[in-house]
Image 1 (tube, one colour):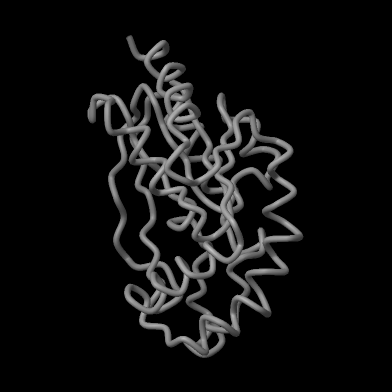
Image 2: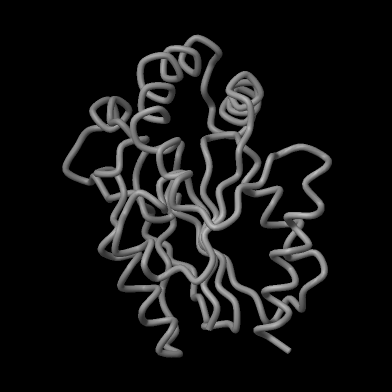
Length: 202
C-alpha cells in the first residue's frame, strides 16, 4: 500500500489537488481519508462551548485514531471512518466503511504536524496558496456549506486560522517531499505524483 499525505493551509486547494491526482487513476485502486473526519468528539460540551474550540490546533485532531486506522488499512483490514459535522461541531453517530486500497490519500491541514502520522506517509505533499486566496476560498465555503456569516468567518480567520497557520501548518512545509503551487500551472507536480502512484499500482 502506498500512503500519500497531502497537507496545506485552509483553502489552499488540497481537495482540488486530490481530484487532479485521482482523475486518471482507477477508482477501485485509490481511497481517500480526510483529517476533517477525525476531529475529536465533544459530546460533553454544549454547542456554544464547541463553537469556541480551536479547530486549527493539533490537539483538536484525534491523531491516535487516525494513525490506528491507517495501520489497520495497511494490514488490509477494513475500518469504520468517523463522520464529523461542521454544523454541530461534533462527530455524528454515522461511520463510513473504508476498505484498503493500493493507494490511500490522506488530506488535511495538520497531517504533517504529527510525527507518528508523518512516518506512515510514503509521499508527503504540501499545497501552497497565497493567504488572500485562501481567505477568499474559506469565506465562500464556510458561508455556503457551513452556515457561517461573514463576521464569524473573518473573526475566526484573524483570531485563530491565521496564527495557527503560521505556528503549526506553514512550518510543516519543511517535511514535504513535493510542494505544489496551487494555480493552473501545477501540472508538472501532479504528473510526478501520478507517475509515482502508477509505478506502485501497475
